[in-house]
Amino acid sequence: MNSHTDAAQHLPTVTFVCVHNAGRSQMAAGFLRELGGDRVRVYSGGTQPAEAVNPVAVAAMAEVGIDISGRGTNELSADMLQESDVVVTMGCGDDCPYYPGKRYEDWPLEDPAGKDLEAVRPIRDQIRARVQELIGSLGA
Image (cartoon, rainbow, N blue to C red; front, side, top):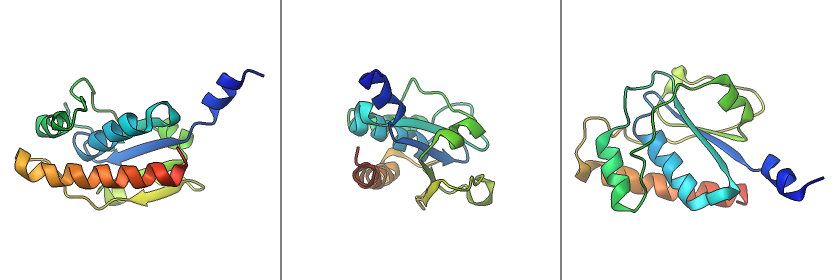
């Protein structure tokens, strides 16, 4: 048995879900990729994905040295949810599917859509704090 392959199969996996997969879930995924590194797998998806990631979210993340500009929006898939140890929802309410046996967290964060950079910074900072807590809870 290859220990490298074995370790890769047991990485904690997190899926971030919001309606449009354009702001909150993209920022959370960016922070988890950056802070969790190769110790965690990250997915993000939306129940009604937008055409592109919110440019203000991209700018807010760039201010803290994380580039999410190349990320496209994704439709949430059953595979993402089935592979996940933790599913974090962000304001999609009843639109978010539920899979029994998964650890769910709901982060009631303000939607950055239509807001300027000044208004998105505190949302970004709340997301960073929650991601840091999540990493600690995963033991990653």
